[in-house]
Image 1 (cartoon, rainbow, N blue to C red):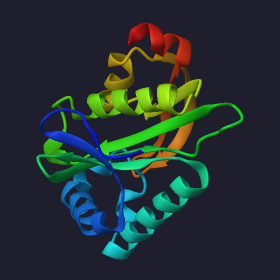
Image 2: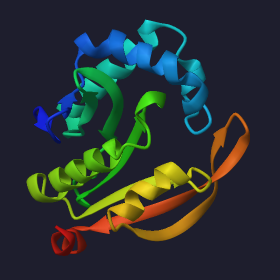
Image 3: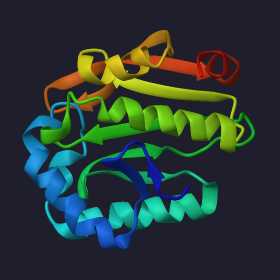
Image 4: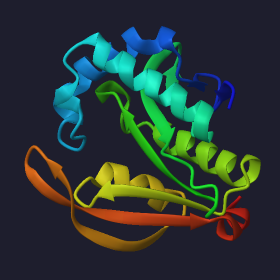
Length: 182
């Protein structure tokens, strides 16, 4: 994937080592809101943790084709969207995402997810895209719902967060469905 313009102010760029400091700072600045739904946030205690994440994302992209991109709003890093490992045999992938506190509620992530689903289905010729969200994370769940994903089920106590175990809602989109929605 290359730099992709969502509109005049928002673009997606593959993560690179030069983004480490901006990503670390965004994580630190948004820690209080992110930690409610992302179990890894409290483990990010210095810039080297973020550097390891970025290096791993680059490695996974090279080995598997999975993309991790920064979401840039008017030149500032606003969040991350990623394909988790692509399952080439099954032609499927899962998308993960998060936004910094100052960028939520503006439709940014819905646009980024739409672009990632389009890329997965049309460019990578995948058949299925999945998004998993904690059932109580209404903002995150609204994204696949807006995009027409089907709620396929609930996985009980799927993730341990600081407040305890949470259930996950699993949303799926098939290529045949996405073509009809485009």
